[in-house]
Length: 82
Image (cartoon, rainbow, N blue to C red; front, side, top):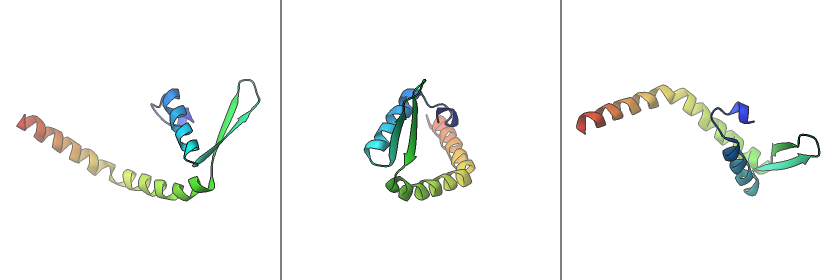
């Protein structure tokens, strides 16, 4: 999973997955293997949230250029004012 998320540390990934497990959104299963293997799956509650998160992803992908342009404009205006 860590390879699929650019820039995430193992520590942050572990903390996030533990929080999601605590909230009942994912279920953790440990397999007795060498090296140890852990598998995470969405719970029914996690599945009920997945479509909302996916809608947010779609919106972000569709609007990333406008957001970046707004940031650039804001930063330029802030630099000129300061």
